[in-house]
Image 1 (cartoon, one colour):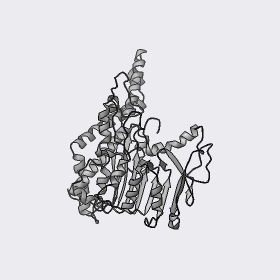
Image 2 (cartoon, rainbow, N blue to C red):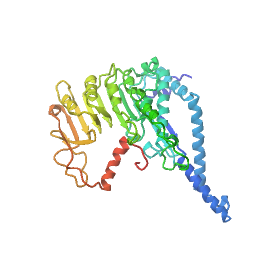
Image 3 (cartoon, rainbow, N blue to C red):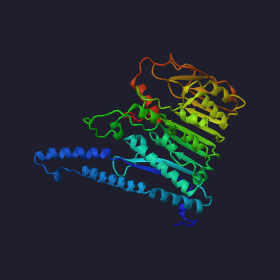
Image 4 (cartoon, rainbow, N blue to C red):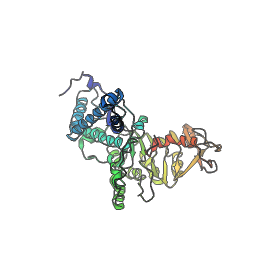
Length: 436
């Protein structure tokens, strides 16, 4: 059904598409504990009706509501009805709005876990695998609807918001779309801004790992044997080119792109005996892509890079404003990038570098624009340098000075020091228990 141009829905310019996680783990644990308590009460003659209080009844009621929502969504998603309804809405905007396009489409995830009414952000939403699954489904629903409707958009934000810490799209999922679809090409041809948060691909290490949600209230049967998956299978999934090529393919559809933000989130610390996740290959594929847009602004957060890939990417996209937070130089140094950024050829207008690393080594900036973003760790000597460099205007062409920190690291890490590291885990992962 087509809407008239003067209807409210056709005035939409900024749209947030929210994936919903109905996480029943906490409520199931509450009901299970209550059942156990009632069985104890029955042994001393107290009836179930007498012992069950209002709070317990609400937990059961909320649990049923969340389970029904799960069932309803499964039917909607598996039938493709969610895509058809969204594409119809997009088509109406394209046909009847004054501009014929959408200025901003943002993808987000919210969680219902404590009850059926309170929305939680991913950082406090329990099992992270439920969140990643919802992000995957929401992304594919949005992309398929855009392709079907051919709705032009100017900004597409893919789970890249400060409220969405601990929520990203698996790097393999980004490329699991039809890049040859002409409708998608039309929709993204006018894209100016692309903030995207990517993560490692979810790779199951064992048979038990397949079933885990990593929710604090998850009930785990430790009597079930845990069989580790074949290493060759894990290696093949880790090395799969599809894990890394998605962003490069997406950018080739965005010829008008001016503002790109890439955030990277680690799903787990690398364990001894497991394959290298090859995180640096995401930017490598981008740097080696056939065509790239000319960018005005580039922001990298938590991204793993190789020296030549980073330099090539910056040069090929003609970036004028460069921001890097927590970027890890996987191989090589930042020296060539810093020298290029301060050269006349780069024409940089603004630089901001914060807590960069070469391998596992952190370093301090010196000279113009260098400062400490926060007081040093207890017992550390801050020195004259800082973990942050910010420059603009004529200051940009001054050589960037940096040196590695060693003597200024405290010999004993205190609980206060560990607490200060928590924001880094929240921002870049991994989302293991105890971090949130």
